[in-house]
Amino acid sequence: AAHSVITIDGPAASGKSSIARLVAQRLGRTYVNTGNMYRAVTWAVLQAGVDPQDADAVRAFATGMVLESPVVDGKTQVCISGRTPTDADLNSDPVNRAVSFVARVDEVRNRLVADQRALAATGPLVMEGRDIGSVVFPDSPNKIYIDASEEVRASRRGAQGHADQIAERDRIDKQRKNSPLVIPAGATVIDNSHITLDQAVEQVIAALHLA
Ligand code: C5P
Image (tube, rainbow, N blue to C red; front, side, top):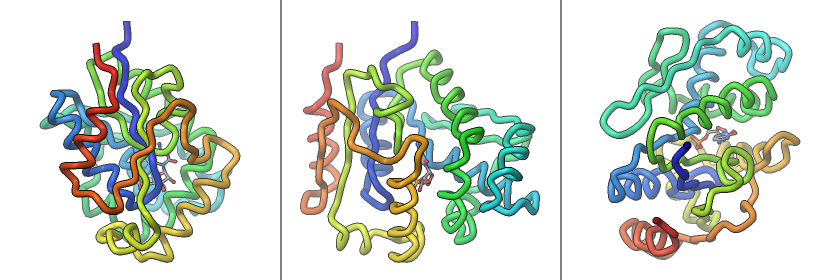
């Protein structure tokens, strides 16, 4: 039987990746960053010269891609048609600008969601993204939604792009038809605008119902 997955969703630059990675470490679970899966597909789309805003072309590309998610040092890597993009590739400006368009395409989501569900059979996970508690594992007993104020998110933007790009990504992610960013039913909402990373990790752990 599949292990139950701790789901962590939230908007861009909310701090959810740092929190999710530490929660996974604390609990000895594998950490899955699904944003990196969408970023890897976007990177491959751009490498192939496909227009990320051309949904038909992205759909055709996604049909032919081969995805693997090997676990390295407690977290999954993304290998796409035999190539593993670096962190710099995944967080590059062109990928930041294109990823929300690629992530709107049904075929892309179907492929990645199937992979995400298959990963749950391999062991206990902490999985982070936009639709993990709402769509990928709606029956999870452990759903977290991480939020932070606009000001704090803008100041944390770091490698994730400029504040206006982040706002644009959130707008597209919240308004799309397929699996928009929402607070999942039954999720515990943790706003980490004014607490430390360690405090946020503690609040997540305190909210879990683990057997
Ligand atoms: O988490 P991160 O900001 O790296 O995600 C990059 C983009 O990937 C998001 O803005 C969103 O468009 C897409 N994404 C998604 N569903 C997920 C995770 C990420 O649509 N579960």
